[in-house]
Length: 250
Length: 349
Image (cartoon, rainbow over all chains, first blue to last red; front, top):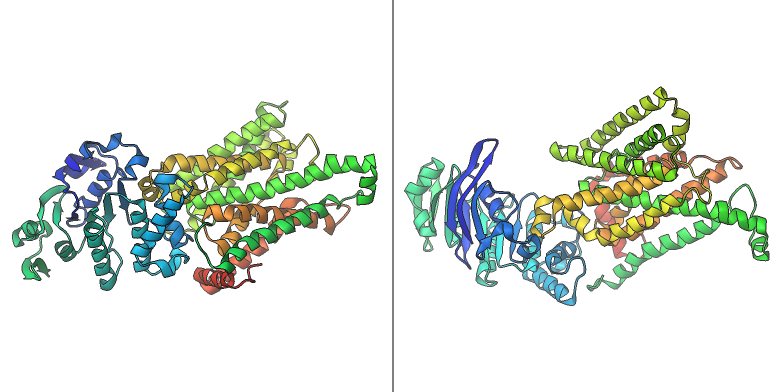
């Protein structure tokens, strides 16, 4: 996936300003940056949820706007925070929606198998007939991930997957992200607020500042005192723990 | 359901549908034999032409109109609630009924000689436009409180109702209009009600797109992710709901509350998956309206109460009960209780 000079304006204000980068396959890429830096908007534009003003998003060699929405939904999945959680659907019914791009409403035996596997992979078997509005935040988030797994796409985009989760569930979520890449061979792009999760669990980091890409590179390249201090306007210390650069800020 | 569920759950799942279907059949047969003229099976079998005529010209059309009304209004409510993601939206609280009434009045004004067909076209167009406008409006303004949406809907439909009343007074049409403002089945005769059959293909269409409606009800991003055009399905669904409502309003008049209560009661027990609840919603709606109709015909026989009165009273009581229960036990309590009841074999009814 290639992003070139992507730009988006809201009411004359430039939110995303000629952003360019290339997504390496089979890796975990975290988009970080302060509030309003444009990371979620970029995520929206590379997943066709938000229309771009100018620039190009090329997916598998052709413009994302030229893709049929249904075909794209077999290759690229996105989970945002705006999902409606008050709905009384069972976990299994939710996961089954992931097969929609393939078989519409009618599930084939193959679909049922994929759903079973996705539920098993997220260890949701005991909850599969429970309504999602009765689950805890962590379980519900896992149910949504299971749906994305059932959708069986190469690319998975997650908008703040650790939002509203406690430390235990957040780090579990990040381990799941890692497994999606390492075990299932997916390319995972996520918007994260916790820099240290990004540093510990991703391969690449794309740091945003005021609508521009401040730095794109491997974790080691981006996690430097100078870069982070400049982006966030806060003093940073970088320490190496278990071979990963982690940051301390206050 | 293809996947393995506990045996009891499968039986329970069908049990509700079966019980409702049996109730409906019994009530339907009963309804054919309730009325000013006494019909007996014996006379009918013996070939009494007079009795046969009453059955075919009056009783049967009435029964079919009642069934279509019950099915139609509850399915329209179900679709609107799902698409608007709000349990309090319905043809009554979503300005659909009042728009259809305005449409009928406009037809009476501009095409005085129009037949049922002409009025229906106006009612359809007005109902669809009114519903679109309402949904467009509530999507523009993010409300923090779910109750705001139906409140805005009620205000909106009162504004439309006000315009209707004003026009009716100005052109001295109040008399003519009154028969569409309050729903009743007493004028249903062969040749005057067939428009309501439109409900049947529309409900089938709703069933075919049940999964689409569910997915759109999960939100814009959620549906786009699965390759479904949010706006297209939203407007298609609202159009179906508005057409169903309009075809009932043109023939029977306004029948409030059905679209609000029936889908909510069924969802309390069966969840929100439309494929799983549509049949029960339709059946329960038919049973409810038929019960109200029978009650209205029996209470002050040989006169009868209009359906909107009976349904309004019964529906309000049921709905207030539902709200009080939620206030007292919280929404979660209902889910929990429903699930426990579902685990056992008996319970739900």
